[in-house]
Image 1 (cartoon, rainbow, N blue to C red):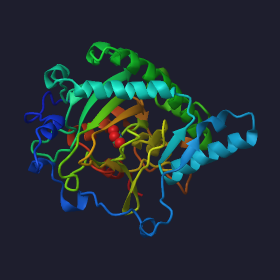
Image 2: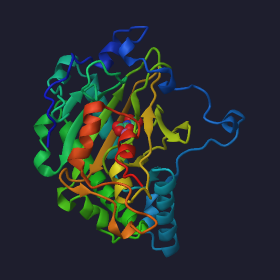
Image 3: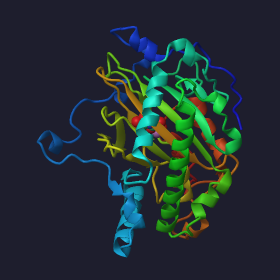
Image 4: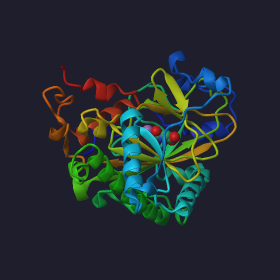
Length: 365
Ligand code: OGA
Ligand code: NI
């Protein structure tokens, strides 16, 4: 399904090229209102005092496949706890080739380093968002984020069109294909564990997503250097609208922040780890036992940052609603049934808006 808007409401500015122009002050359109600006102070007083710095949970996924039943249970319990309490965890020993991960990220860095004219051949529109883009949302005059991106579809296979993926760089298409294949496999394993952890049959979530017809797409985010990083954001606060996201960040440049109550926690990425986070559809299916948590990206004046965000989503026409097995008299369904196509129109039109969407559809209790 597509949405009805065919083109951007105003000329698109490539943030990377704005950054390269050497400007000292960012245009007004990128300046966030004071309450949304990042605050460059340590996340907690204990961190300032040299105490423990809180990070999102780290899970060694290989424990799920250990010969030791206790370790398997312990690992599944760690994932369950992370899904309930954080909506985020870092997965290590996840089975995806580290070399492939690095090569895929580097080939995307090369893409963004190509001359503007070569990238413009892939310029996207809000009809499908596929291609080279610089904004989310179509409202004229809306606040803009300090980033460019490349968005592509991998699944369902009928939406996969390699001609829309960059070439050059020469190995880009091949790497994206193999990377996506391995990441989809990992997502499938995690979906089984989430199902079992929720007390559902192991294929429940996969089937709810439409089985073979489920969706997978990738957004490569490019956050250029910014002369006034304290005034703007690389990506405004949002929760991911889909099922789950596997993020491969730039290990050398942090930027992702996760909301924890009133605070924003800056994630320290571990080498070769995926940052896994749950999207709104898993919050709905689990009737809010699992949380999709708000996150955002801050930028800096020293280094650009590249991240690969892989989204694993329900098929567009699947009706997503809380699993009946999780509904009781005390815990009625919190959300009405909605197709994913319908659901994602909101972020595609309005851009990132915190958790306003999943909160707004909540049924009155
Ligand atoms: C996203 C996202 C975070 C990052 O693409 O949805 O949250 O660190 N990305 O790039
Ligand atoms: Ni996100």
